[in-house]
Length: 258
Length: 323
Image 1 (cartoon, helix red, strand yellow):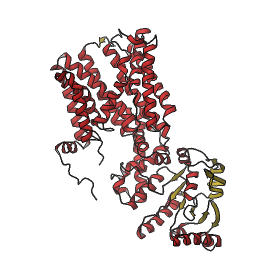
Image 2 (cartoon, each protein chain N blue to C red):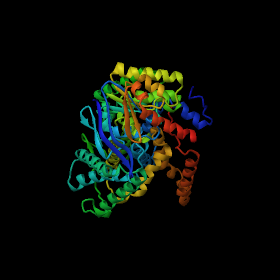
Image 3 (cartoon, one colour):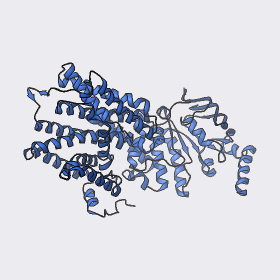
Image 4 (tube, chains in turn yellow, red):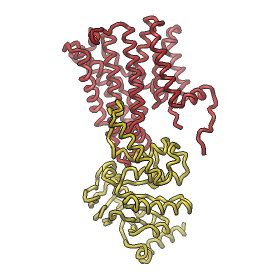
């Protein structure tokens, strides 16, 4: 297992958000985390990436403990993420955004910058090279010099993915990458997710509400409801699991009442 | 979708737009430096001294700009770093008879340490708390200087020896004008290089969105600390040469008012933008001098002019313009 969670519990002011979650992602696999709204999916992402600190349990990545490590440490260890509401550095160029991902793989400081040492210049070239490669990979190289905020929403999502790839991860967590995308963009996203795994050997874990997309790309699906994992398995197995149907039907009822 | 279709409306904006390309900016800077380089031939002692002071402020404001403009940390006690540089030189050369040049490295190390001491425990605070703590730090340094034997208490240190550069004694007001012109040019180059570097980008990332920056593997506390220490080195370099220029320093040179003036230069000109900050530093120093004929009223009038500028151009006279 590349990522392994054991009995992870997270509480906020007495409310149990995650309840003894057991969960795992294998190296080089495509996995999804689904569940009704408020089930705790994003909280689980935040716990893995160090933004939340679960009170109990164990989270291992690549054989190392990552529970309660700082977010930047977790990223350095090889876990990258995107955010549910795109969080780009809006007033910076696409190129500069993607370069951010390289920060944890490089080391030049103030001295190198002021003196423009050969090492620092080589590193800057390397950062630019990787950034361009990542932008080409997701197909936004032609927008490198645009301000991030001036791009269409679908492209902003791609910038976020390119930025996450630039951290050179072994696992990438995508939080609702298809939200707000049209049909064509969704098809391209499915293709991109597969290429991330096939061409870069990066495991992908996604949170997604679009069931069609989830069923198409995922090899493993985990279903979260009220902070508990209620089912896991292949698309086929999960689709026919009575617990899953109940969890989703319950939610649809509520939505109909509203 | 093109972004540059919005035509700059007034003359000033069109002027800035003209100087938006890096090449023209470079030419402008080289032009300004050339003019500044020949100016002492035509200026009297009084004007040259004022210009020297303005160049000192360029160095200080560019240093504070790294903290406030690049990293987005409000610092109300920046004069403390200026003081640490000046007093380190004063103490080592006057009390211990050190050579000026040999005293520079310890002075810079002292400034770095001051940056770490004030930054380390406080950078986790939100920016408004940080402002209060830095204000307190500035006052602590000044009160320390006022009360310690080694800093000469309230009367300060005098008879700081003039630097000797390979047999040439730097002592005339024209010499010091060129020293500060050189420092200002170096400060501009350093600021520019920092801005276009891995660390400079990290400052902007953290300023724009701390969480997203951390998700990119950026240690925000460390990056902010780097801004603090880099800024303090600029301040200390200003202080080092300020002390030998005047030959005497006293605690009142490093008051809260001094910190505010430097901060004003940064904000007035346009935070984060090197040209803006240079312009701000010149306005802060030359403004009151140009209005000197008005006597008592000059500071009042200066204050009103600054208020008007901030009302009309809230992001500074020459703000950061990106793409």
